[in-house]
Length: 422
DNA sequence: TCTGGGGTCCTAGGACCC
DNA sequence: TCTGGGGTCCTAGGACCC
Image (cartoon, rainbow, N blue to C red; front, top):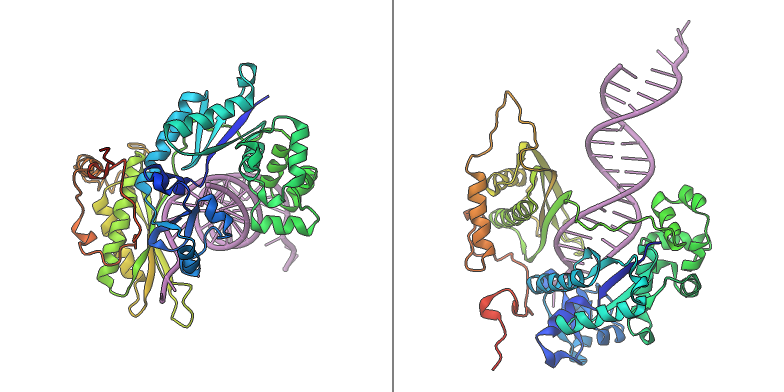
């Protein structure tokens, strides 16, 4: 019998903003998406106001002001760092940890029950993370990942649980599943829940009792697996080591619409540089690159244009210079004058480890010999926190850069922003 | 005026091969 | 004139996740 726990940080980004701002303890907090567009995190006071996840801020600006809500731009340097600390602490507490997202991790608790009651173990995790990092978490425990997820949902929703739910007993599973709308099940999104409701499946319990074979025919093998997981049959294992990425995307909406090609060239060059840096961080080389640009789909009566273009390299590369050159050539193909561009992005895929790719005998290798050393120097400088180097193509003015009008300090990752104790 | 970014997996259909 | 069966690979699109 396996046992999983899902540890999920409460309102993670909002909680991060509170760690170094005790004055915000009881004040509602929201965090905005890149470009200060939508609300992507809400403290529980904000949820209680009925403000929904993902709404554009301009639609609720007045409401936020009225309730004295503290507003923050996304500060990924801060969230990423606090996330790493949470995960490290979990590693010290549990036999095996799978980092599932920036604010969630699965733990393998198989065998723990013999040593300590599971709910006590969950409470200990909760207490330790709160004490050591200052981030509140909920813990859900169950015999499969899907049930652990559901247990976590219950831990968050029902406050009298104290934020820890042990769902290892079948009786408790059935009780909770009967109360839970099918949409809350992990892997059942908006489309699927609509289709399921149409055939009379409205609760998680009804889905659990559906025939997996029939569901597989009518829907997919994925949903069949979900049913088995709801029934306590573990189909999804722990992945203790993160699998290597299959693609890397860097895209942004612009702070101001872009109408000049030169500005677009700079933006695209920046996204390439960032994507290439991530690629090297994965120790990978890419053989394919795609560039896309588009106008805003939200503005009515304004001419819309969206296009993308891709290329493959003769051998996998990781050199920012080669990628920028290729990307700008692709941009030449898809650029059209006269539009107000809202967003652009770069994608890399078809990855190889170093030295794995078979070089074409006749074409020879066009790879630069200084590539590895040169890129390593750039990455080291840019990650040192002491300086920043970039290519001329990336531009200097960056008028298109995203809006971040409510940014908090980089408390934990920049020397000059570290809080002082007087 | 103002609407995020970054991923994964599965399936269906077409091209192509023997 | 009659025109099979089985397989792979690739791509686009749809669904989901945080």
